[in-house]
Image (cartoon, rainbow, N blue to C red):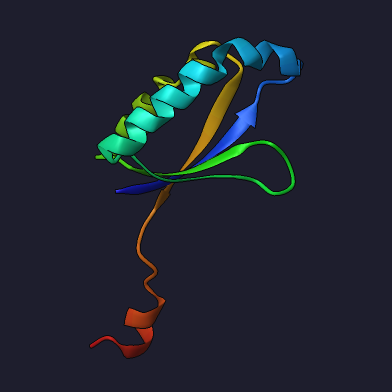
Amino acid sequence: MKFLAMEIETEGVKPEQYRPHLKVEARRVWELYQSGKIRELYFRADRSEAVLILECADVQDAHQTLASLPLVQAGLITFEVIPLIPYPGFARLFGE
C-alpha cells in the first residue's frame, strides 16, 4: 500500500539542533530507499520539509518505518501519514 508522508518540524527547534543527526538520517533514508519502503522522496519547494512516498504493508508499518528515522527518534520532526488508493474516477466513467 502506498502512503504520502509529509514532514512536520517540531515547534521551537533551532536549525543547529538538526546538524548532529543529518548524516545518520541520510544513511537511514538511503537504507529505506534501497529496501523499497521509501519509493520517492522530495523537499517542498516552499520550505525545507521532506515529502515521502512510502510502500508499506499497512499504516502501522508506515508509522514504524518513519519512527526508525533518527530525526523522528530525536523528537525534531514528525510526519503526517496519508494512505493512498488508486484513482477510481476512470472506473466510474468507463468501467463496466
